[in-house]
Length: 181
Image (cartoon, rainbow, N blue to C red; front, side, top):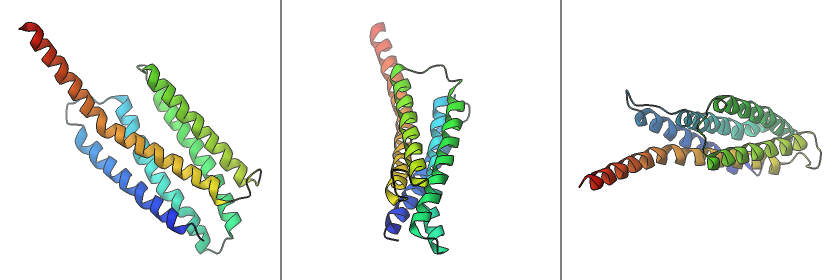
């Protein structure tokens, strides 16, 4: 298999990001501090999707080691991707449905992420059933790229949101102090 190095790199990056997110999530929320639903969902997306990406980037290697031919490997891998993407999409949607404080920009971003996720599901479905795509690595690779991109975006958001929140709070306090003088 010529794509083994790429798959192993995906595995390493996904596990590293998920691990760092777990560490950040553990130390970021201090006892008694208010935890926001968006932060909890973001952390869940990073950890769950990161570990899912690690598993799905090693799945083809497992199948190859059992002597499964390449076209069947990509069909099975793409089919499994459809199921797991659908499951995680529903899980995230259910966690976000009670979230009422969405800014317009966030709503647009969330819809875009779901649309791209749906397109990834369709592409992998077509690949799994030998329609348009010929049970090849490319569509599967797209699903790994998307999930890793989502994980990295959510990781940076998890890391930077509290910093921006603190900065806004400090600026508001300084502004109030200047108004009182």
